[in-house]
Structure formats: structure tokens, C-alpha cells
Image 1: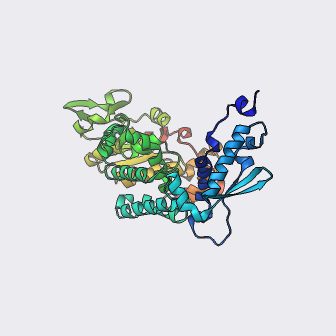
Image 2: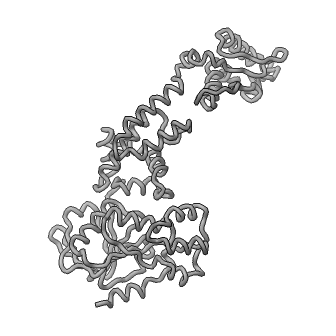
Length: 414
């Protein structure tokens, strides 16, 4: 005779004592009572109709009997109490007075012990300058009983992530591959790649300027790349690489070289009259300087591009240095990051109110995230244009702007 058990492929797992206890303990760990002492009479319970509605199927006798055996065992251990109606159990309630014994039975560590362990790790690492922002952020979340599961799964992984961030912060001026960094940090070439998403997520949480950046681009900011970086430039300047002189102006186009060559590269001759970094690739291809140099950044610069820019500045400290980017919060952040990390006195190029007026028909409205980011930047050198952007609800992408007249004026200026 066919029964509900045989027809549906009866699964014993849900009927086991550990399965039911784990569900109850999960509810306990997400409740207020597990986080702090509460005077409220909070009941941790599950309804059988929600846990397994087929429990009430009269044809599923094996399932029913297995559940009854489990309920008898758990009540005899005083781990739970049950509310019944007739021969069926309606709900199962966790006995909070037995919570330590329940954790021991399940082989789980009490969430309060985990929390104390995490706090101890974070407080010990908080004394390290490079880890202070991350540790402070996580400590505040722990003390507020907010979940940090999106950042790490356990204490061991927390230590691994802090180790990675400490390495990133202390070596950002040098470029190495992801696997090289992983070997240095963990003695394993693949572990850092596995943790890259969580490390990046945590860095975004403590550094607002990283919002919207991919995991790979964030690591590149710290000099960690999957493959050696390529630096693209065009214009008028002489480079010497391994005693080979390259006259950029005679190429008639752009040049790209691997960061591997930086150690053998130097600037020779008089140097350029000016230097412009650009945020977007389309703009890089459009601009055709004859007396200066254009360097493609691709967003926030990385260690290799920083080293190259600083090498030019050392050779030619008295020329004008410009940055040309989007007129939005991201573009302003890239500009500020460029000055802060290179210590080169860059000036913004075509990133002002006049440019917004000129290209008003091509502007786009601000999102709420745009407005929040701009509000936080009001006290910067971009205050005038930010006031205008917030008032008029506009932003502008760099690709729209024609820089040819600006470049021509620079080239013709004696």
C-alpha cells in the first residue's frame, strides 16, 4: 500500500532532535535575549506547521512516529516544552534555563562566547594604526549586537581578514600579484583570492570613497593586481627604458608599458610642459596634446601609476599638473585621492560650474547616494561647484566635455 511517506520520499533529517534544536538555537541567537539581558518574557519557539506542515498528514505515519520519539526525548531532557492539541504537537518551546546544556549537546559554541572571543581579537588588533578604522567599526557593531556575518564567518576567518588588511595597508606603495601577496600573508597562493570579497566589503564599509568599486579595483588601489599593470600615456616626453630612449612625440599615438619596466625607467630630456591625468579611456583617446603628456588613470590610481607620476614630478616639478574627471562625487574623490597619495599639486581641469553651464543639456540628475556623498564633501576645494550641483540637481560625465580648446591653449602657451 502506498503511503505519504513512500510517495514523497520520506526524509528523516527534519525529525531528528538535533535538527529541531538547531532551528530553535538559531532563533535564540537572532533574538534580543541572546544579546543582552531582557526583562521581557521572550519565548523562543517554532510552530510545527511552519517547520514541517507534512507532520499533520495522517498518511505519513513514519514521519509522525519519528517526530513523537523526538518530542519525547527532548522533553525528557527538559530541553523543550511542547504545546499539543489532541495527538499532535502545535509548537515547541526552547527551555532557556538549559541553553548551555543544549549547546553542549549540539557541539556548538554559545554565541555569547563567540562574541567575547571576537571582541578580544578586535581589541587586541585595534592597537595597530593600520587596523584601527576596521577594528573600531567592527567593535561598534559587536557592542550594538549587529551581525558581522557578512564580513567574516568565525574568529579564525576574522584573524585572516585582519592579517590581509594589515598587509594591504603597509605595502600599498609597491605592486605585487594577488598570488604573491597570498603566499606572503598565508603561505598559500590561493587563500587571499578566496577572502578577497569579504576583505573588499569591509574596506568599503569603513572607507566611503570605495563605494561602487569592484573587489579587483579596490585591491589594485593597494598595489595588489592579478597581472602586472599597464600604464598608458601619450604626448611629448622622452622615456629611457633599459638604456633605450623612446621619444613619445614621434610615435603618433599612445604608448602602453608594463609596470614590470618601472624599475628600469627614467625620464630624460627637458620633460613635458604640462601633465594631465584623465579618468576615462574614451577621453584619453580623444585628447591629442603636442607639448604635454596625458596619463590614463582608469578611476582611482594604483601603486604603479603613482610611482610613474611621482617619477615625472621629480624630473619636472615646476610644470602644471591637471586632473580631468567626471563632475560628480566619484570624480572629486579620485582627484582628492590623487593629491593625497602622490603629494603632487594637481589642479582640477574642466570640473567647475562654468563647465556645467556649458554642457547643461547633457547633465544628469543626482541620485540620493550622489547627494549624500556631495554633502559630505562640501568643505573641500570643490565647495562652489558642489553647491551648484546640489541646487540644480545635476552632474556631468567627462566623456561629454570637449577639452580640445583647453589643450590647445596649453600647447600654444609659451
